[in-house]
Image (cartoon, rainbow, N blue to C red; front, top):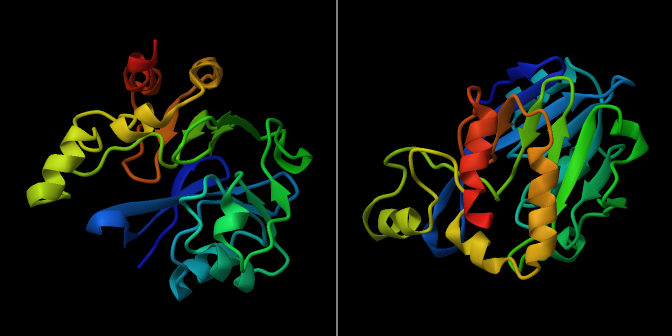
Length: 231
């Protein structure tokens, strides 16, 4: 059963059921949900939608914006779009090609759409051969929202050879980290460093990852540690 967990004023997170990726690797899932100034709801990286979650959301307001922050997080987008047909689908570059059954109304760019520009800043990490990810910063709560670029799987999450691979890839560890495969996949290093600089300039108070815990303490230091390799 899913439940909304408050992160700050008009911002929530929800932990979903694990999903299976390539090579049989299971990933914990997490989405974020925010209430915009017009009362509508913004849903980031939608997880599996069940009746309990749908009922909880209905008490907060109408879902009007669905956000797919990279082209690896689109699995449940079609279900949400069908459930909330009045919602606008905002997606990172590449999502439309991987979700032919979903109409992408807005391809996310350098500037946030006017509807949420007063609440969110967004930073695009492009030039990566795996995916282009849009990272969001919620101004009122100081929350930085990552999807795949920052990960920290729970201790003991993987067993056997998968545990070995995950450890080598820096998916598991004592601190959140950028997985090694994403580090190697950055081909435009200048763009990568520019995006990191943008993120570091934000007054970050807490960090949310789709595949990891919420970082509530020393968020700025955690961020510096995660990107120290890129200096």
